[in-house]
Amino acid sequence: MSDRAESLPPMPCLACVLLASLIALAQPPAAVEAEMRDQFGEPVSVATLRGQQTVVMVVTARRLRTVKPWEREIQQRYEGLSTVLVADVPSEPPAEYARVAAKLAQRVPEGIRVLIDMDRAWALELELDTSAPNLLLLDRDGAVVASVAGRWTPELADSLFAAIDRLREAP
Image 1 (tube, rainbow, N blue to C red):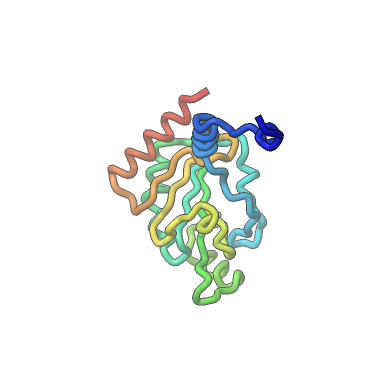
Image 2: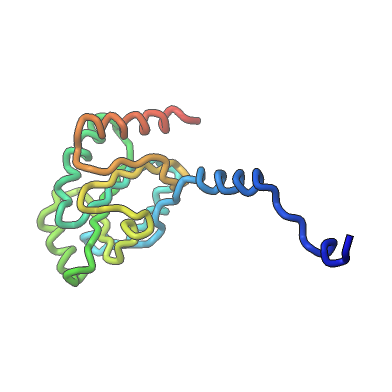
């Protein structure tokens, strides 16, 4: 053998490369860690929900009312399950936090907190189409373990509820 052939690093086996790729793909995405303010100006981060199973509902601010059937159904079915609403604020036309917060404070029922995503962090990081509700189920570690997208339908609800049931039964 020549000296040159001996100095080359060993090539990884194809099976090892494929296995490493599959393991990376199998890891659920983490929730967005960006700190946002709610409609009352209070800073909130999803990191504060660690240790809880949570449903995060992300939708454009203009269609926030489309999550109402989802929220009502989740609250009736799963007492104590944490839910978080995130209002995605499109970059066009430009909007100011104060104006968005004032509108939400007027329109959202008292006691419901809405995180205002001025940077579109959720939509961009998780590649969400926020023209319809996106419901993301987070485990206690903050990983997204299931998601559904769309307005409430019995079929989508069954899909989300099955995922919630599996997560709640897991150790």
